[in-house]
Length: 334
Image (cartoon, rainbow, N blue to C red):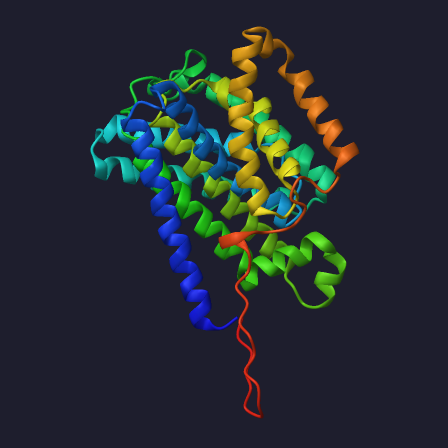
């Protein structure tokens, strides 16, 4: 496949993205998608952004993290504080998104310095502990910063994240994650996932690339949290405790370890599945959802251990292939 063919393929994906956006907007304007399901769709895109972050951390670089919702919450609360202080105009909103993603990435870097030296099981326990610490911190944050609301929740955040903004950052996050995975750094992270000892032998700096994937993935979680804070009018610490972290983990495992395609499809399907269960089972779903989660995981492991998509990528997320020129001066690009 030549360079021109790849450019045509990228142009086709761009046109397809615009077409999808136009169709959804048309369905919303015509009333076919009511405000409730529009919020569910927005939530699906926000969760997808956060799940892409965990897919990079766990699926691509093989680091077992089960405290992902803590970084989601850090991004949400940070962004909420920014717009509550600066107002709800576009400039303040964009500053809040940057602040939310940056704060989550910064905390990930500081936490990563001690915990990323641990192996996978111990890393999972450490990130779980960090998630519990964050939950307790959110519950009592009002004692330090009253605007955060503490256990009663944070309100008063300007609701400026509409479908247009969320769709834009949804697409940008997919592009960022795809380019990271297909970069030299992303391939080094994959080498870590397959065999750390072998990666170390061939000269890959294990800690550096673990940290890179961890900070990048947590930054995406922070961005997702910042969008969430400006789409839904109420932040509560329970939105960022252990169960939401399990949600992210299930999405990555169900979609297929190492498949961004699987993460995106599963994240969207997972959010709509939860809403369907809520509609069918009512409040009973809230009591039984832990059992439902466990059953889905057990069935997946028994039936398709590698996840729905395995490690396959499709469409835009599949690597571009540049065919080598033939002849004595041939070169290979990739």
